[in-house]
Length: 436
Image (cartoon, rainbow, N blue to C red; front, side, top):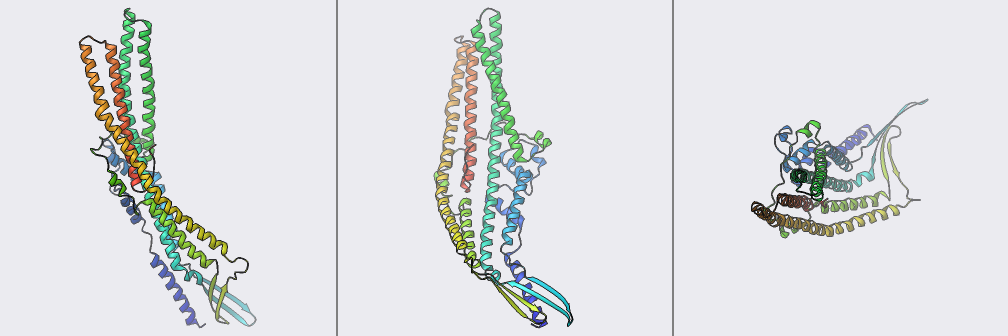
């Protein structure tokens, strides 16, 4: 080969490399991350002022923004997905050509040889590897969106539990105040000879039980608040400044309809997209294996004395590649069956999630509209009977405690609804989950 021919080979190699880079494109991680956030309806985080979020009680949407922009754990997950994006994209590029240089001195004189070699099979299978890389990129995109959904669901549910725990702790304090009043009055009446020891002990038992419940309620509030603090990625100063609303949000006027839920069973669901991307990836890998398992071919162009080229071919003598091809077919078939099963499971998961959501809604409405008003009317009647001297103060205080217990049960029913609502939102996007 002449020198001009050798330079032509180098130019051709450079052109193929540039073509590979241009065809695959470069990774725009910021755009990929923004697209994932938009796909799962995550809050916009670019303009979030973290310090401003601590000036007022943190609502659910503010908690989501804070977690997405402030949590080191979420940042770690994003960085891991960025590496997955880069690796998936790199797999679709052409392998670099290899250059060899040899300089030998002999009695006849100086002998210089230069080689440029290209993997011919690598070049011929490049379109298939591009399709494989595209499927892998889609898989990573879906996994990134799933990570965001999981994080959002965790934050939503942790926020609900923290607010509910704070609200229940407040009512536990009211129960203790009522029990303390009963116990103190019982002690005084026993001292005055108007109460026996059994009646006084009964009232003190109410007080002791209420105090134990308050201790547990305070510990539960601390645990749920710290769980939220960890998900938000708050340091000690931020955790101390964190304010939460005094109560959970009101129930929606109407629940989601079954038609609204069933409309989400389509190919845009993330679980279906991931299963389809996995199948596309393994199917493309199957085609690549069919070629690579049969032959390896490398072409080397040489300049020197003598000039020419060299072809290196793998001889399939001992390993015919049949096992690799069988395995590739089996993996592709497995992915196809997994796609079908995911489609079946998607419908089932939505039915379960919606049933839990609707049951929690109906139960919370029943507590709000029936049980709490009924207990309130009973307390009003008890007060009237007390004013008419038909019942004593202990009966009145006991009724007040019963009313508080009913309100606490209503708070728990409301908490279960908002947890089920967060789970349903996750399921609608194709990320099945259960209410803990």
